[in-house]
Image 1 (cartoon, helix red, strand yellow):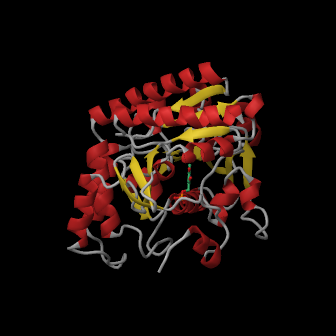
Image 2 (tube, helix red, strand yellow):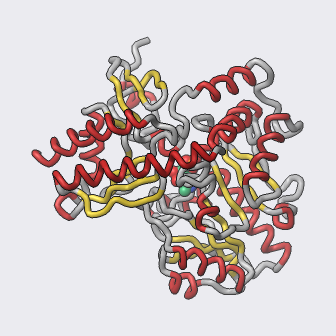
Length: 401
Ligand SMILES: Cc1ncc(COP(=O)(O)O)c(C=O)c1O
């Protein structure tokens, strides 16, 4: 069968508009399409492929586990899941882990746990969830409603209730909403999809203090920031603010679907037998790969390498901007970076993305005004230099019109 991009429109539900390119293989930070055209990957499958494509340690973990045991369901536990959970508890504040298959599912579990905890410990009145405008937490109906973009939550009938939205980096807006009826405040420790918005240190500390004052749980959605992306294993560690619940997915599996929710024992105990679950959650294949991911990323050299690579990206983007004057700001942390387009180019992030692809570079957008870069954490320096060269050619093309 000949597989072409046209087939997508014939056989797929039209909720995505994928690019014309169909990649067929990848190695490290390079990808090749059906025509053998090569791309440098600054997108990393939306902050997922944290060790690039086909990293030998992940291929080995997948093939070894693939020859042993693929699946059991949660009627039985399995060795990779228990090893991975142990590692996650050793790496973080958490004592307990719940496994899911995606970021949205990890967040769904976090929100349901928060509601259960509040109901059990405080009573029915404590059900309000506060999150932030522009935030993104996934596409289940609960997470999309907690997320701060009505474009994703409208049009599906009645929404889950008692959810309010404050403004990120505006502590007064949280203070105006929070009360003893608040069950949880959910936030990204750096807004990703919302445009690469870093939190002020005082803001995060202030939210923690408000949660403490009102006995509300603080939920960090580290689906995009987690597993080394910011240069720390988890962003809460460099922010020096510890949440009560943390969710992680994307890079955790390095390309194999897995998500996890982490919390402390006294909160975890409210997700009693039968209250929540997933057939695939904690699947041995996914957990074996994720264990290999953590073994590679949890390494001071790899994490320090993220900060070094951030500097290379920033310096390169500043140089391009000096020449072409297209950006108003380069922002973000580690290898979760955004270049915001200035007034002349506002709304044209997709145009830059398409031009980049023409020149053999995969990157992302975060809204209409920001070009986003989330490459592999171990992308070779030559690939950064070569990719930035291609990006410069794309910028030149857009500027020339
Ligand atoms: C912060 C954050 N939370 C949750 C999600 C949803 O994750 P998934 O697409 O794996 O459900 C994303 C995905 O972009 C995200 O960036």
